[in-house]
Length: 484
Image: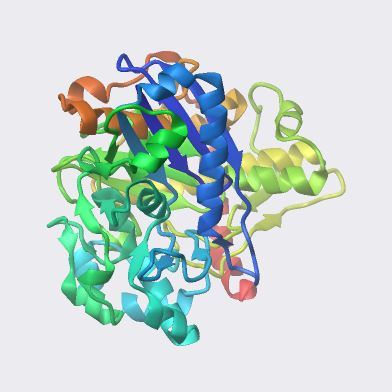
């Protein structure tokens, strides 16, 4: 048996997988996000440990014999979070998360240093880890001085599991300290933020073992024998392993809290000008390109809270497929934006509201606004030389066929829906745990799931969206200065 552990933003999820890759059980435990100031986003690292304990207790109660047979664990997690750890392994302060925009000024300063573009192949986004440490150095010098290690969220959990300070190449790619082409830490970039390699976790490929589960935890969870812990991957790279997007030409579109267009590449293929993320994949000698928006399903959840109506009910007002684009346009920049604007100060906008605008109008505008933002990501990947013939759908938002129809029509690209099952980041992490424990050919293990359906673009809607998308693209430049 194999465990996949995913440290998300809103919850921790654990799945139990057999050697035949059947998911027998899963458990989740919720997490809270702290927002002490506008644009800030933090979590208590100890809350991850407590939530993992809650999820594991539930899994052990449901499947004690199977949990006892676990031989490998894989980890996945939200990327970029700056988790500052003291010499004794304790967190120094709350972790600064991926959607925290406080370090925009520090990011601009680091991004102006040409070495960051040359070595990482990426812009320095405010959500990345290095500018957060630059912010801590300026605003919390005592915390900066006390920092023995900087860990990403899943790797703080790894420290608890194994006592090893380690990470994988895909997660490390989002720090702005990794030489992404050479797959090693860059002493130059670390020095640019007054840090050194001794403060970094050891680097591994995602399918490699980083250590073994501490005996006390194995006893607590009823596991027998040695349990290998794999390096794992950042959430999107792990999700790609879950749906078999590990070879050139394969791609997925994710509708989670954030939104992602993800394409595997056989070589490091940066294009800084288009704000594409060019990162290592969770497998050796493999990379990927990624366009990211910060509020995808998060935008719909925001509307649900605002209107006090559950998300399924909001979408239900629309019917199966819209006949025409919404008369209202929505920018889904509730937490700032990455691709293609790299603007932490950007905020959400509705435009075109009228007396007749109702819940259905606003809901459709939100779904289309997210689809158009992902079309921006697709265009950015195209500018970086990547053509995507079809997508697989992942994330909670992918359960809505109405949204996927809007998405396929806006992207003008078919979207495959995997058969009912759990193929997300936790499943990908479990697959990496299997590889670390047993070895094997990744191509035979990290396969595509069978498809339940394929959503093709609706020709009339795709045609209508061309005009709406062009008007939508003109909205951000028109209101950018007003947002400040």
